[in-house]
Length: 469
Ligand code: ADP
Ligand code: ASP
Ligand code: MG
Image (tube, rainbow, N blue to C red; front, side, top):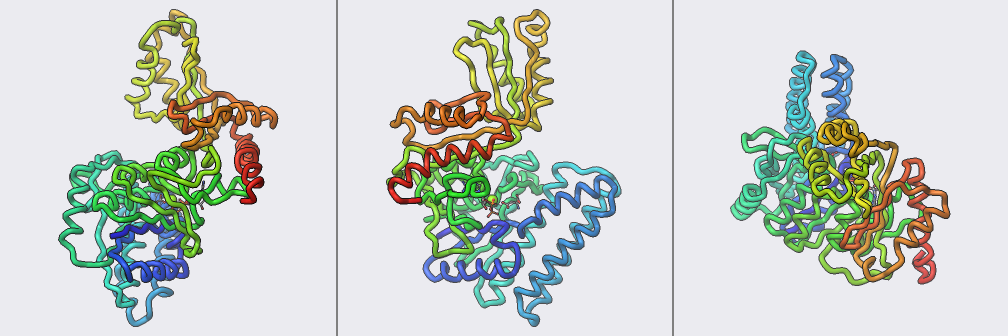
């Protein structure tokens, strides 16, 4: 059994879906296949915009929703022969009518909950998976459609729900053990809570759906089909001379994706790494390209750095004060306050003088975080043991990632020397004790320059010597 996931750009239109069908046809010659698909490219955003407009009482949602409906209908007409279209067209219409009903409700009530947003966006994946399954069936390739929301059970944290693996793994294993089909189609991204209410796994979550299914079986291999020929040494939208990474470890892939490499949704790695399932990144538009394999052990790293990534919209919050020195419990209270409000911390640094603790987080959380930390330390601020927390925004994190960094001293010296020579001011630094990641907090406006000079230093110069660039 193999699991293949196709992302939004791979299923953006009829021409692209035909490429997906070709890949699937090749694969089913040799193995049982589960296909997981995203919504058509851009549809999730459009559905979120529709619900937002409706909540604001703006009738423009109707036109947007109608355009989304037309796009799905046009794709069906282009994909499926005229004699076989009608059932699929009416299914698309029924689903779009349901969406319209929900949006009318939002419009009338002028109220939009996270739960309702999940319900609305779920139609994106339902529509794409139903249409592609229908296309396969009209080509006499029997394909069983399964609603992922019936197999993947989560908590009720709408928008980014946490999977209950003990229930989910059993449901998936039981379902596939009982079915005799050889080809399955599943919508990515969607799940449901214990009461059957629709939830989603977070933006980009279709990768995760595929990994959850692959690990529960367990599948022989997971393939993530996208619009680039693998994981690259840096974001190809920021750096011109990027190179495809042929092999990467689970840990490295996890670090790179956590620090911004969008090609894979970070939670995806955990289920596949726990079962040791090799996971490939492949290009739907160039299937002959090798791609990247993510697996436990790697062999061919000629470089101590595997890749460079970055995240924008970071805020740095600093708690400082001489009253913190030598007194245990400050960091516990700081992180407890953040945890209560479910604020995710991306990076932590503490000076050895214990005079300050600095945390990096998504800038959208910074104001709430400041308020709760100031409240948690109100007494110490009042008695001047610590200063009110300071917040800096417009920051970004750049990270160098590589399992081999620990055996190569001098990398951070090279990194910071390089950034300094190029006029990039570093606001904070963090290095995990695993020495697999060195992160620097810099100004957003410096990101492109920083990534490019680091890429040149750590990849282009090295690879030029061995003629890889
Ligand atoms: P999909 O819709 O198939 O899930 P995504 O848009 O989520 O695809 O991810 C693929 C995109 O990730 C690529 O088009 C590329 O621009 C971007 N990307 C960012 N960093 C990297 C990287 N290090 N390697 C490859 N792609 C990257
Ligand atoms: N359609 C969802 C999104 O755009 C999930 C995915 O594509 O992975 O976030
Ligand atoms: Mg993606």
